[in-house]
Length: 339
Ligand code: KG4
Ligand code: ZN
Image (cartoon, rainbow, N blue to C red; front, side):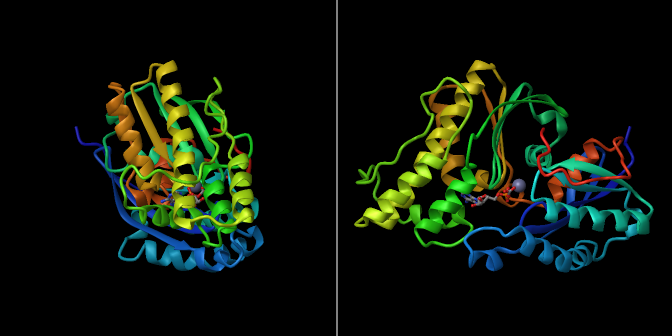
């Protein structure tokens, strides 16, 4: 029997992107009607990182504009609910999205559903896929500018955090090392582009960087030592920037893959799920697939299309849809919200 269509708006302003999407769920299958992202990259590039109060001001300006674009051609009376990221993220930024969503909910007379940004990065994998496509248990690796977490997932809404970074996140390491090398912000995509310039196969790099915590039995990460090692090498001078970028990227990839596969084996999972901005990294995606194949692991590997790895409203809309009974009125920002 066909179930009712559901149309939902998703809003995210947790960091430096103002993102609003409209998602339609027809017979349980989600499809994106619009997915608008206004990036503040140029603004923050000058500083090599995100300044929360500057980002907040941009959100105030961008939210109504992004909303207008997102609902263009859509009959807003058909909207069933609004999903909004309440955390984790930068508190002043989260509040702007929440205030906007509250006002919109009053105007459209539709309920609000609070969304955890980390869960949204995981569930981004379900957009354009049927829900039953994920085989549980799964190990989720959420790698973004603010987080590096390994999460054991037994179903939608059933999560256990098993490891995380003790200092910098993987994306933060890309961003900070790119800044050291004078490459701009965000660091992930620029370092990835530079690394691609080294075309010789099996080339022996002259630079070698540490793989922090790779040999430890836990599922935690640490990336600040890697950043410091890059800082020292950069100060010493006399290095090739392309080689340095290749080695930074490979050091991060080695640690992420090693720890994730260890967790997948230890917990005998059926799927490995990636999410977050760093999951957009080509080499990371390629090397994950290769490792799973070479180790002959019977594990399904899921990663969203690149546009759904970095912050977006569609992942928020889908997460809210999957928790649509959990409506709330008095939403508050929680910058340290845990999964
Ligand atoms: O998920 P996201 O958009 O925002 C947060 O929730 O933090 O992730 C942003 C992070 C940044 O640190 C950025 O450098 C990194 O994701 N990133 C990448 C790539 N694209 C974005 N890192 C490595 N390779 C990429 N292609
Ligand atoms: Zn994110």
